[in-house]
Length: 134
Image 1 (cartoon, rainbow, N blue to C red):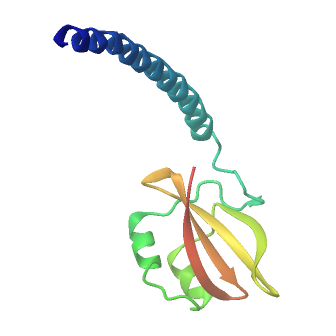
Image 2: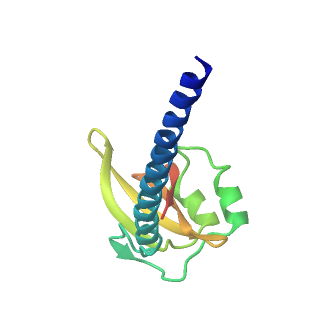
């Protein structure tokens, strides 16, 4: 009996080893595809989504970002403008709520140029922000 158990154990081992080899090769191909996808997204320009370039060298510093994050929503657009100058670009307008057209402006971060802060305005009110990662 002992010899039949060890022989069945030996016949399963090559099967498991072969499966591991195939799984490893499959993962390598998947990583190659993922790497090419990441490289394509890394080479996208900062103008992606921009409708109008306003100030080509505009950037947002850490200090400006920290000040901006203290402004409450629905505060005046002019209060935001006191902290940030003209944006890098304007994004297309969109309707966030029924009947309200929102303006969006993008600011690349000086300390992370692949990240942009997008500020949303509704009429002359600051309506919020989001980060856009390229």
